[in-house]
Length: 365
Image 1 (cartoon, rainbow, N blue to C red):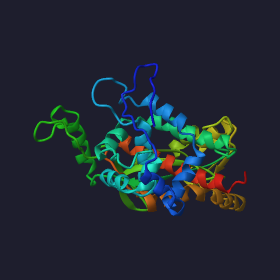
Image 2: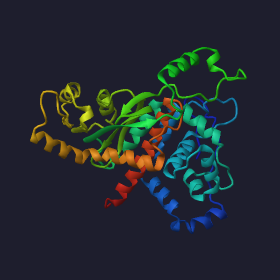
Image 3: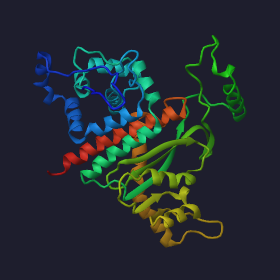
Image 4: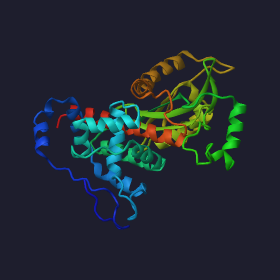
């Protein structure tokens, strides 16, 4: 994995040359019996990393200066965080340890056996320095690659939202207001030793009530392709925000190809004139479930229509369920919304790449 000179100057990245040693050759002889090796080879066979690398080099500023110690190539760090998602590694220190311990990881990263993993603090800094815009474009490029393989991406879209617990303990609205005021002062940005705070509590979550139970945290808004199950868009908001107002943004964020969105499916929480008008204006078929109004109950035909829509909606709930089981998706990992957004967008990329590899493997050549 080498980086050449760019128009903006020499990339100050570590040179990591991956070559076969005698140990590598011996290991490769038995790798066909290693399920992790086989899975990661399958991943490599369906993705072109070059456009992903190009986007990382465009948006990731670290390593572009000739001064200072050379940085790790951003694609290497990006692939490290994918391993964290696929193999349910709970922390960055554990990720560092697993990379040093697993031969299959080293092979996927093209990191020689004698080279140590990047330090766990490097993973944290890399995650913090990636922008939401960069991750949006990177996820979009992956979906475009699958579209070019002939897979449907966004003709039918299922939209939903779920509550995500804050990484911090709950506090009252009054306490939250006071903490926000303190955080805006010069003193509030410093710790007890007058150094800039490395860690701070979550000040972007808020309160809502669902099923008569109070909830302090965030809300994840997501859309999933109804044919192949790809996550098309996912982002967070404070939990008090109504699901319905996010439907237009979720739909717009789900468009990654020139193909027209045919239908949008959503539950009763998205019902109402504004969303129906948005879909009609954009000539998108309305798949939003209807609900009783103050003046009229649902007709038998509307009840049957809701049942037919539920057959498509389950697919986004399936994503929520899988991420809940394998990536603690019901709880935020970090106290900053931006960092949590980057984290769930890594989940999106890892989820889609794994799913796309399975689909393409089953398609006859």
